[in-house]
Length: 94
Image (tube, rainbow, N blue to C red; front, side, top):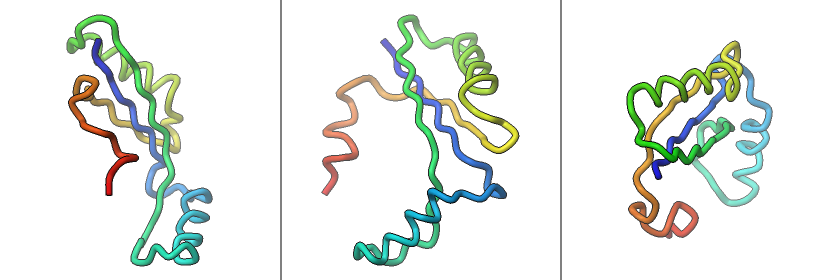
């Protein structure tokens, strides 16, 4: 089974109140030097069949018509490594 990841982010010219709130809170929490924060969405799609060019085209269509509001958001589609190939995951980084 393959995993396809769709990341959806607000376009740079669109205000991001959630990102701004996080950015303002960081110095109070002891995290200095962060110039900007943008909040987004991540969709993980487990695909039962091989990920062909045609399958990726359908997933891009899904992202364009359902997962992202393309007026204010942009998206990327990528195939992720097989489960277990990434190690412990982002939450376990030191």
